[in-house]
Image (cartoon, one colour):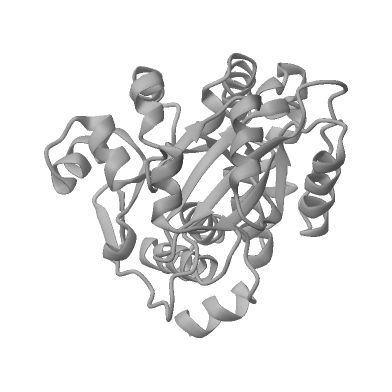
Length: 331
């Protein structure tokens, strides 16, 4: 086994978030399902953008957000994702490199443009996402560098990128490369809507022993297992995985590894401003603890601290000193 250069290498959608506050009435007028994520085409993205109020553009993408959290915590992270050769593509590449994350995927010429996610945030902090995948769904298998994957302790994959054909093939190749190098594979289910489209694929990855760490929220857990309640879902899934991490929003999170189980409450937050990226940041905290050899409970606490920080402001990437927050929390 070769030495590792990175703690985590993530593969995901390279997206720029366009975030705008709105009232519930706006969601109703646009026919949007509050708190959900929907894929939109170019025409709908342009129409919705025209209707939105003033917005902020912040680089996002689920796995890229996790990399940002990892880097902020002191882990060495790398990212693979496709942007176009346009203004938003330049913004994304600049932001991820400025965060200290290794990123070397060449921009793609021509249409479609760089992916963007139109995020509407209601006063209660709930985010309703409308995602135009653009160039990100054209990540080619040639972008997967087996040597780069072998140089990371953990390969982290986001379920969102399983939807388009080219990136799905790329991620399958990445899993093979990680397995061949003896590296761990972590996978986040990303969103319950994906289970309707790819649930059988995800279950097969688990049954074939290709996933070492699975991240799921409560809704995704029930959707994947068909269980009637949270504990039944955990009981059905945990024996199939080396590590299962299940989050429950304000109810906290649990992790199960073999005969070990840990549970932590959610960290207190003075005001929930924007829940965008909460799960991404939680995964960053957990993975940082995991690659550092921390106990399950500490990994969960790091995740909870990182998630609490990101929901206290607009945008899905950390703004406060996560290292200091974790050090204060864990002593």
